[in-house]
Image (cartoon, rainbow, N blue to C red; front, side, top):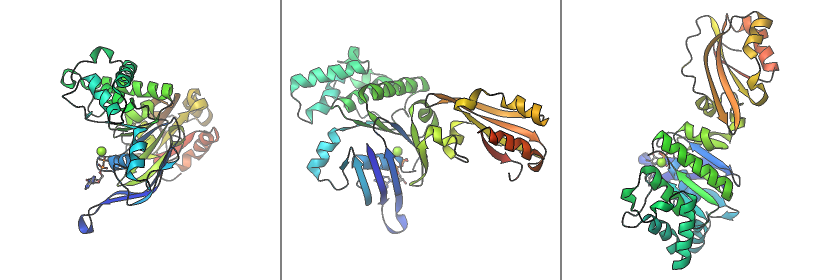
Length: 331
Ligand SMILES: Nc1ncnc2c1ncn2[C@@H]1O[C@H](COP(=O)(O)OP(=O)(O)O)[C@@H](O)[C@H]1O
Ligand SMILES: [Mg+2]
């Protein structure tokens, strides 16, 4: 659905130049919910804005649903943007219009006639659960309700792609959850592809199939979440399983074991003590549902150096577990 190929974008020039995007390549499959994570200033908004050409890249190709937008003219772009919905952190609603009026506006600008507009706007407000607020004004709505209007407006023109730039960042955790659930349901029911920008790992964990980590305008890792959690050293995986800082090893070996799929319910620790006679100390554990499957990471302390624990580490690895040494020397 989306293909970004070697995108660069620089703001300013000379000493004050900011390389907002530096050779970014990314593919989002049809129907996927894809998350882009990164700190403030990483280039996330610039990235999402290149997808509908609100930001023209300096170089690289942008293709959406098979159409190359980076080479398209204004008329072609206008038509293409009708097939791409977008939602924002601060909702961007018109305060002078009712809820229904805000949704209708999206249809007005593409020339849908008045009767069809009303019918379609009412239908989509029903989908986002806001029928009862049709004639309310934005100032009378909660943040979550405002974002539901934002989603209704974005979907009014029946796009195949939804772009979301920090759409839940202004919302409390409970409202965030309900909005994410809505996005997920809509994506499934309408076969909508979603590219979602966030600085919150919780958002990724809750609804994304795949994710990319953006840092200083560069993608440092990307892939399906299930693949990332079994990639040694993955920073995204580390963020998916928040285990805190690694304590000083003090003559011990400290490892993180990642469980997923079939290995999630095996008595690994008991077996480690039994077979190798090791007194294992559990330093931390996190269990998450990732792409619908249980996965977990456990931080263990094994007494003695890595050399002393070679057999145990090999045994764990031979069981298909991802074992990462996080303290105590090389393995
Ligand atoms: N229109 C602009 N003019 C100049 N600099 C910009 C512009 N838009 C973004 N930037 C800069 O590009 C970098 C990336 O910004 P942005 O994409 O907004 O990051 P994020 O959304 O991850 O916080 C920042 O250093 C920002 O200041
Ligand atoms: Mg931003």
